Image (cartoon, rainbow, N blue to C red):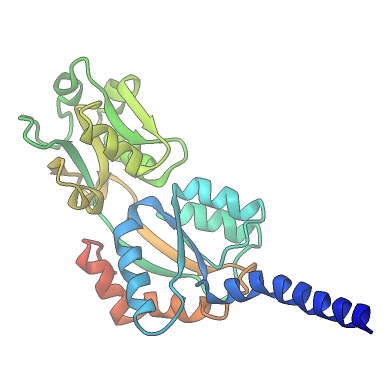
Amino acid sequence: MRKGKLLLALGWLALLLAAFPAMAASKRGPLILAAASLQESMNAAADAWAARGHPRPVLSFAGSSALARQIKAGAPADLFLSADEDWMDDVERAGFLQRGTRADLAGNRLVLVAPAGQRVALRIGRGMPIARALGDSRLAMANPDSVPAGKYGKAALTALGVWTSVSAKVARADNVRGALALVERGAAKLGVVYATDARASKLVQVVGVFPADSHAPIRYPLARLKASTHRDAEGFRRFLLSGTGRAILGRYGFTAF
């Protein structure tokens, strides 16, 4: 009899222990894969969503190219926010998006930055002497072969006729925040980042804004993934696209369409 009760108690204990991970998971918010440039704004949006009584979304930031590869490798995420349309197109073509959930969330601008307090006599325009301004230093950029900020930057410098003069001087970073960090530390004299990144840092100054027609429009598409299982995923997606969600992004310098 005692043995039977002991086995029953152990059985209940095993069930409770097995339930703990599921209970913990139910208290977590949806997993959001977002472009590195969205760090401050997405954290603010997640806080606002949690203040409404929802589990706070779990945020993972990286370059859009790296996030797209994670999704295609089977990452169990709920939402994807890319810094350009190309990587969202890539994920969509591979069949990983929930149909009808893709939408443009925000826009941005591309700027040239330098360490705060550094004197830089350079005006952005066609044929600008950026190579001379760099001297023996480097131009920090997100990888121009794959990362959106770097691709926009290469397009802008090409349109202004100066890419060939600086391509050998480029210090490539995994994402735009990595490029920003190189300028903040003084490891690069100049850097190409988004206006929102420059705004988030007190260690850099904006040298100039690249003409809007020197690169493709900077758009941040948002979509829910087919792998999504969290009950709040669709609600948070709609929240981001609402007037409240877009206003949060606007406070951090993102533009509307």
